Length: 250
Image 1 (cartoon, rainbow, N blue to C red):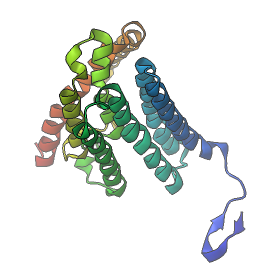
Image 2 (cartoon, one colour; image 1 turned 90 degrees about the horizontal axis):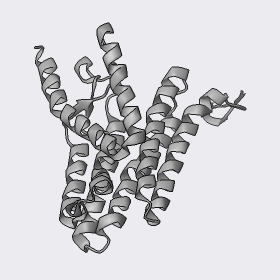
Image 3 (cartoon, helix red, strand yellow; image 1 turned 30 degrees about the vertical axis):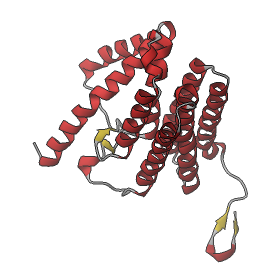
Image 4 (cartoon, helix red, strand yellow; image 1 turned 120 degrees about the vertical axis):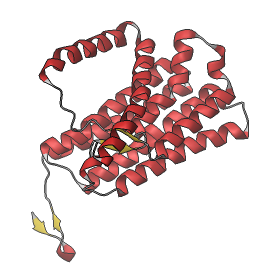
């Protein structure tokens, strides 16, 4: 390590462990961009699968950085930029290509609204206090970007599984984009899951439920996708109730 100008220190080399979280972040970006390529080819099953994979990489990179104690300003900036592309731009463009490209200016407005909402949500997340009050550490403010991307693609999953014509109706898709965008920038508390601890007697039932979801992902992927989306949406009012009870000290 040699001195750098203006009191900064420059590293001659970095550990592979330092690179690992950033490699996961880049892998998520590549997954998201490849999903857009498949969307251009009309391969919607692969599109959704790659965006879900990008969400998995996004969940792993932050945890890897904390576990390996390699968190950095560079990693945080890279993560936010990649999240903006993968969970803001790509899902909106996928829905636009899927159902909205022949629907005029209102459809494009809805597409932009969702994308801008994710940008604002990520900016708020990056600027939030690093040491929030204890009552808020178990919650996000609004729907996180990966969850928003997961939810906003529900109409495509409905169409793939059931072939329902109205799932592609421009008015419904536009309304869905706006709704999910509003949930992303809202102040609604949603479960963060960072400090969840299970009682011992709940471990086996939870493992059994996870096993069912994994099996369902292979056997009935779109039904499983929709079940997870419904479970997540159902957890939002529960999070709101718990948050305000904890805030009041109940």
